[in-house]
Image (cartoon, rainbow, N blue to C red; front, side, top):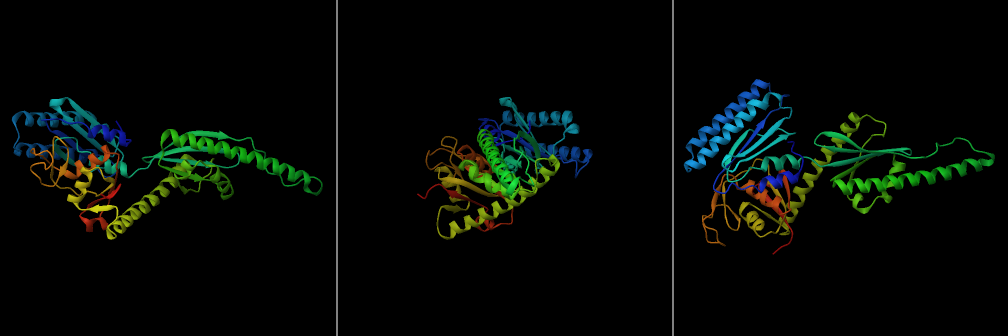
Length: 381
């Protein structure tokens, strides 16, 4: 299954093996950088490292057996499928004792990892999804409009619309009267066509919940169309690209990806800038692991900010599901907390399941000065 959206991530994060741990494996399978043999060797080394680490874990025999079975299943799966795998990354999740198995084909290469923990390790998947915005690109002129979906480096034609607009004329009748009348008629037909375009754009962006809208058109048509767009659509309008309806899909995709890269860079710079501003004025932001976990536990987080590849062990209450850095006993429930390999992953899962945004920031950034983790808050208690 291809990793496509947040819904898949939320469903995966809800799996709990109860008394049994889950094995999560991530493998870089990019054939642009490695040969098939090198990928096979990387996988073999990953499995061997996992077996070695598993042998040293102090776990009940039943738990260990389940994890060894996970590794056997993963090894068998890759023996069947790795040579024909056509994506740049692979993620596998298994909890044998609970008959749980999930696989994802990835469009971005992950770090090679094998993790044994109480639930699936979703953080690398969240980081990948964070890199992509589902985009609707509209390119049009006075006679034709086309809508494309741009997502995860691929392009797909969504809709095509042709307008009944007469061509421009160069000469008219006596004193230009006929030409003016025809041009007024043409302008009216163009406006009717633009209204159709605006209506179709609203339906497409509403039904498929696109994050961004790009326009490819002449300035004269853009200035006429934008006031006709629904306010919901106008908020999604992010960029203009130099494309026309009759351009090839290859050219349209290339221009769209260039615009998306620039927007993503600007977006992350603005996020960090806003975070620092909020921190300096003691506003709606917190930083550091302890404070951020506390706000997550209270449901006060709106957007979680995490430095990519930052990880720390921690603990979680099995009853109230609160997250902690090192509390052995939950202050709320007064019961023993469970250890987790990476409490940052648990924080990401909690944020996703609480309808929070999660932003993964590439270091170095100013977030590093604030403990590599922070959050924007919904309100200040």
